[in-house]
Length: 331
Ligand code: NDP
Image (cartoon, rainbow, N blue to C red; front, side):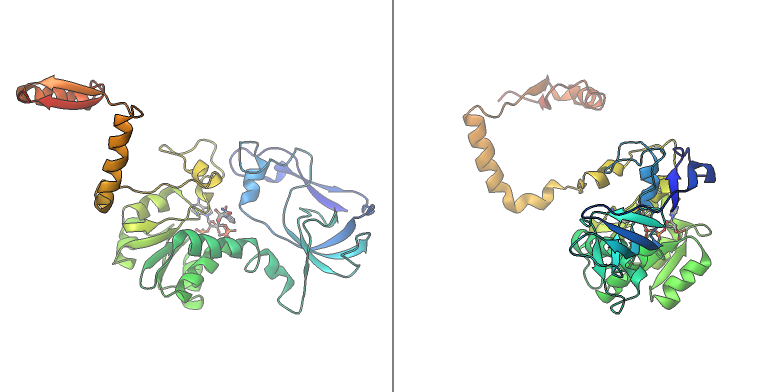
């Protein structure tokens, strides 16, 4: 059995020596197990994370273990009631020619329905990522503008095309002219920006004249930075991937957004003026909490208007302690 093991944890970009190719005997399936022959192995960006022992949403691959990965296989031998030799299955056997599975994560595939390999892409995990991140988080509305990074890739190409189906203006960002041509001419995107040769900000301005309503973010980094300058009121940003930093040893300055993705946390702009219509609700609750002593309130009262500038400058240096107010005259 040919297997590729994780040999060392990469520093920066993975290199050949981080992997080890080994030959081992083809295993025999035990009770309740099946032996699969791998037909297709999916290679996906998340695997970079599994090679590293940095905290993540999934455990790292142990050194000396087979690299993990989605696979399309044919069952060779089965001791499992639901699978028979000859079945085609989607599984998670990893980077190896033969894998043993207990069947829990196996799903039968019908080769007449679609090419078998699609189960690793458009009708599999990447396609599902595109579908839900766009429709559920992105909430695309016809007539809006969406920008998709890594636009020609497994996730981005599907996300952009679903946005087209939903009637949006779709602008891709990709890493070569050939990819951009494909995205526009074959997939029908309205425009595509080459992130390596074009200035992102001016290209976004030119291709998104009405601003950006949805940014389907596969990359974070400089594309996110440029997009943020041009987002519209109420824009939505499904943070799907941060591939621009997967190889980074030292993260770029500024906040690292990875925990947002892992924890499915939400960052949303807030303006109190949007809540005027709920003012009475607020007053009712807060007044009664104050009366019941459930809510404490501290004021920092500065005397005389002439002291306002000094007090205000102090506020910006943290000198106030509590709500800063100026007593301009006696009450
Ligand atoms: P792709 O097929 O899009 O391949 C990765 C692409 O990322 C590359 O082709 C390249 O495209 C782009 N890229 C690589 N390095 C950089 C960089 N430094 N800056 C900007 N772009 C870069 O991969 P997938 O479609 O499988 O995955 C896309 C993203 O979605 C990844 O970030 C992945 O981690 C994420 N993902 C997240 C899931 C989730 O559940 N949150 C599930 C599945 C995927 P180009 O050169 O054209 O820009």
